[in-house]
Image (tube, rainbow, N blue to C red; front, side, top):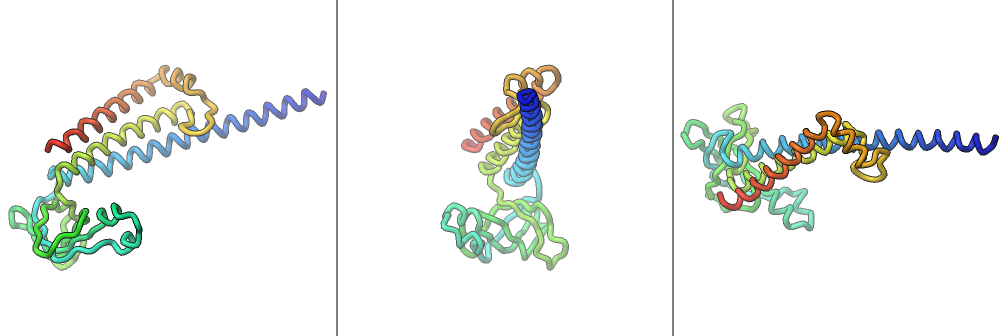
Length: 214
C-alpha cells in the first residue's frame, strides 16, 4: 500500500511541475511577443523620421550642447556619446515653421552655430513652449532602425510559437521542441512562425546592408 501511495504523490507532484513549466513557456512567449512589438514599433517610428519619410524637415542651429548628467557619471564612454542634448533654433525647410526652443538628442557635441539636419516629429504646443519633438535626420542610421523593426518580427514570431504550444524558450520545458513543432503544424502557428522569421531575418539583413550604401 505504501509504494502505491508514494507513486500517486509523485505523479501529483510531477503534474504540478508540468503545469508550472507549461505556464512558464507561455509566460516566456508573452515576453517575447511584447518585446517584439515594442522593438518593431520603436524601430519603425525612429527609422521613418531619421530617413525623412515622416515629420517636417528643417535645420536646427545649435546654441549649446550638453551631456546628460546622469549618464555622464557612467564610465561607459559610448553611452556618453549617445546622450548629448543639443538645443537651438529650428527652421523648417519651407520657412513656415520656427521653434526657438528646439532640442535634439545626438551622438556628440557640436559647437555653437552648427546647423543640424533634423525632422520635427511634433511641433511645440505654443510659440513659447519648448516641448517640440525632434529626431536627427540620418539616413544610414534610419535604415539601422528599420533593421531593428524587422528584428522585432523575429521575437514576435517566437512569442506566438511559445504562446500557442507552451514550449519554454529557456530552462526546462514541459513540452519538448519536437512535440511543440509537430503541434504547430496542425494549424496556422507554423506558417505564421516561418513567415515572420523569414521576413524578419531577410528584412533586417537587407536594411542593415542598405545602411552602408545610402
